[in-house]
Image (cartoon, rainbow, N blue to C red; front, side, top):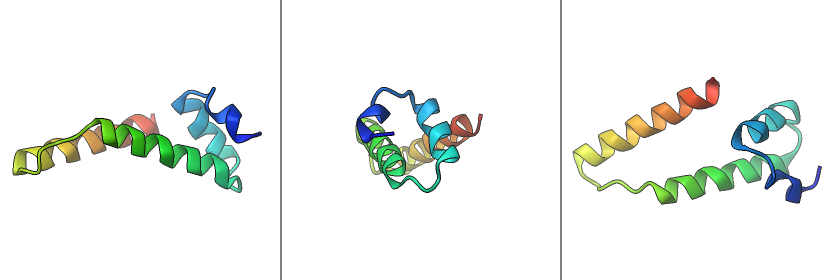
Length: 67
């Protein structure tokens, strides 16, 4: 599968594909790119409350990806 096909996949489809094709570096690069893009769109203030909110969002993201 070419990298251009990854852009047509949902996040869930891409994760499933990555798990089934662990030798494919391009799919992991796409996953990292998506995570980085989402992280940039969710900025939190560098206060204690902001760090707590960031950690909570991260933990929720992990639990969703395991579902």
